Image 1 (cartoon, one colour):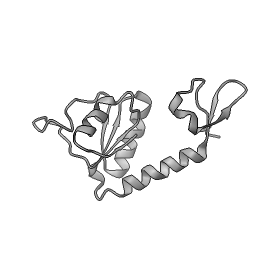
Image 2 (image 1 turned 30 degrees about the vertical axis):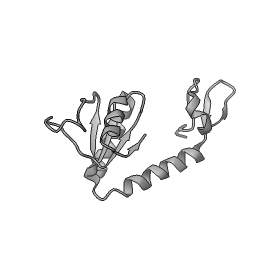
Image 3 (image 1 turned 90 degrees about the horizontal axis):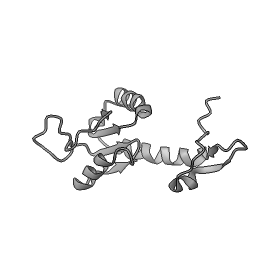
Length: 127
């Protein structure tokens, strides 16, 4: 068993609707049906983009960087792993300037700068 349904002992207020129940040892159990619905919604958004190169994935946290790299490797999408350079979406003079049609963020709290820049350029966001 992969134990992907196990969460943590802490529960963020925004995650209450995705939790099934709490186990006897205090770990929250994730509702996989709701997770699957959101995953399929995100997949439909990504499939709607004509070219995979127009999708950009940002992963600032260490545990998400390998997944972001693998996603980009298999789909030919752009990925920004590790530290995000400010102005990647807004500063056209910058060396690594990108104009994606869709932005995927692994952790909106950690990656708040790309989320803010996406709002400046009216970029659809999938967090």
